[in-house]
Image (tube, rainbow, N blue to C red):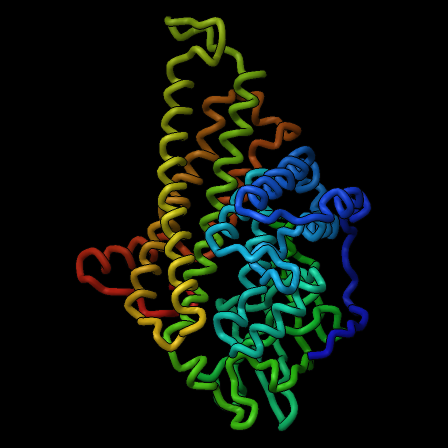
Amino acid sequence: MATSLVPVISQAPSATDPAVYAEYESKWATYPTDVQGWLERARDVASILSVDAAAREKANKSPRAEVALLKHSGLLKVLGPRNYGGGGQPWSVGYKVIREVAKGDGSIGMLLGYHLLWSRTAHVVGNDEQAERFQKLIIENNYYVGGAVNPRDNDLKITYDDANITYNGFKNFTTGAAVSDLIVLEGAIHDRPEEHIFAIVPTAQAGIQFHYNWDNVGLRLTESGSAKIEGISAPWADALGWDVATKKPDPAVLGIAFPALLLPTIQLVFSNFYLGIALGALDFAKKYTTTNTRAWPYGGDNKDKATDEFYILSTYGNFFAHLRAAEALTDQAGAEADRIYGKYQDNRAAFPLEERGEWAELVASVKVVTTDVGLRVTAGVFEVTGSRATASKVGLDRFWRDIRTHTLHDPVAYKNRELGRYVLLGEHPEPTWYT
């Protein structure tokens, strides 16, 4: 694929200034070499972001600086192969890194999560040559990857000739794409709508027009607004999983169960930043309660300090227990991701659909639990911080707004129903865009 970039014609809004984090480019010039090092790097990023997270999300500027910070940290490369300068870590570490960053800033944890998924797309739906080529491109250039793949919208339409495929259409949601270097496109061939093609193209092209209209209650720094795609072409060699000679899906790549891993992989991305946001809310509230919350003087069993009150101790203990359980379940699903990718990445044809179904149901369980406990904790922390914690300057509300916004991505009620069919009828979900 061509790597030269051309100017974008869309007018971007005001953006955060990457210069504010410039010092970390040299400070983090050496990347971590082991799991604990990567997790510590993610915690450092979260700590930096948490300082002014409330003010930044209120300003709602395009997150150019925040993406630059991710680039400086090396976290964009955590899953990349070491021979190209990546971290060489498995998905379980990638998931934990997402979670750690989300503790400090849910929006940036989400941006990191989507990037890690899109940067590995060719490993799931592409052939070996494409997977290797795109990893080299992404990791060596430290590119941030966004996507325009929202399946709730009509598919982008693909026309083609002997040399290229060309995308045209509109997407309501394009998380991270407006601040990306590369963008994943997905569409259906105009005369064969049952056939879909993923491709990765440079973002800065005149035919990719971002509308910069993401102004929602939560996850405000994710640049998840809409985009118009006009006349964006890629060579057939970049059509992930397609045979260049026949102009048809390669059955050895797309005619097997392995590509269906893409959906549970990203669903587990979602759950990890939900969990990170909830853990961040609990930690934020804990600091507030121990320094600002006043004891209630009319309870009949009055205490001098809020931290001695029974209901506050009980509530924090209950939240902590449920979050611990959610973490254990989430880590179990992450470990299963490592097992599946480790066993079948180099022997994809051997991957059985039944194993995909079992992992999908484990991931669905995680989605249900992290949604339920995340909403409960991020709303409930106000009960143990007090009325002054609702002040806009405190920013405690951002945690609930972030989780509430993304947990509507696909209704968790359908995950409950899916799990009910699994429990009662022994059914695995049919692979779709959401299961």
